[in-house]
Length: 289
Image (cartoon, rainbow, N blue to C red; front, top):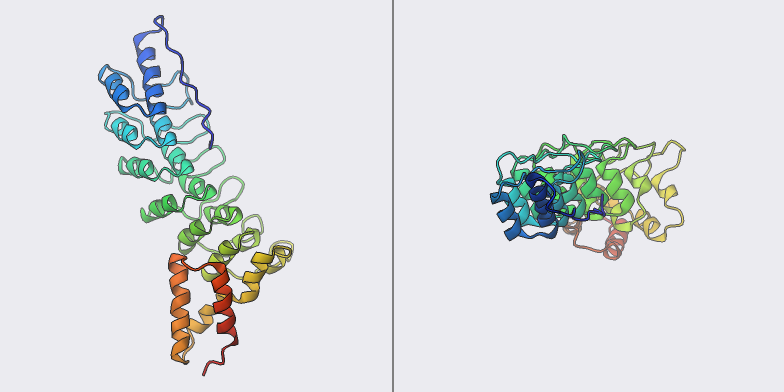
């Protein structure tokens, strides 16, 4: 889906008027030509036109290419099918989320596009697609709706969290972790088992991922990271130690200061992993009263 592979269809005078207008409308949407698209709509072009079932509609083409004004113009047309699915089962919202076109996704959602019901051939939702390509702002927007299944598993059992973790999209992991079980096993492995990115591993540990959880082969995430120096360093730093520090019943005021610093990073992700290593080394070695 990432590469659309669409070539505007040729138009010739021998075609009936509906086909001519429909093909021109799709070409306008693909190119983002709002003026011509509006003109063709006024001339009676069918906003849902396709030559064959499963082809891309004008709305899908505009959403995939990020032409927000064109998307909005099409959504204003009475009878537009906002949840039309292409030959792979993807809607315009799937395409917008795959490409990270936040404004298009917002326009589609405002028009009533289904954020969770429509699923592609492999069972992926718009949220899975956004996590697959690392579009954290789109992930946040979808989750804010409050009616998206953050635990949905595709046909290959991959979830949004496992998909983001495997691809190293730590901002997506931080966004979705509060909405799902971070220790859920997918294909016998947790998200922490599959990550190969230090920032992602840190985000998962801070969200409560268990470093001692065994996969179906009896291997822990720390053992699975063997050979990946950056991820091993995150495990060795004890980056998840802040939980014990933060919830201790007694301690020096410095403990609270360090815990607050860690909490800020957990929420906004403003500190690099290198800074984490220094802070966590200090937290672990300090002799707290």
